[in-house]
Image (cartoon, rainbow, N blue to C red; front, top):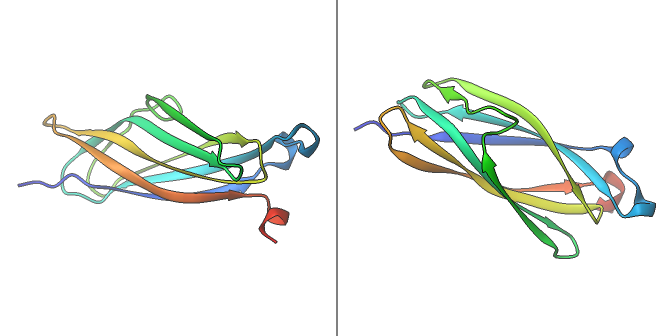
Length: 124
């Protein structure tokens, strides 16, 4: 039996040019790398994000594709993209999942572990 499996890694970056503490807006970029670590080709179809700022405000984002793509990954292949989000506080976190399907139409979810979004000076 073939096992579909994707792994996800994340790198984040504060975007000072898109942020304004006076307006209570802090912007962050996140680069996602999705790798097919299974032994069967599969496609990333949709995303679900839970974005929480340090005041406890939570926003859920669901949608088809990631940055306009629904990549089909063969075993060992990876897909990388960068997107961004805004928070009302200088710290927060994101977590979520990717909804995926194998070439033979078996659905599976790929969890995305929580990751921090933080302006460097907010860490102290």
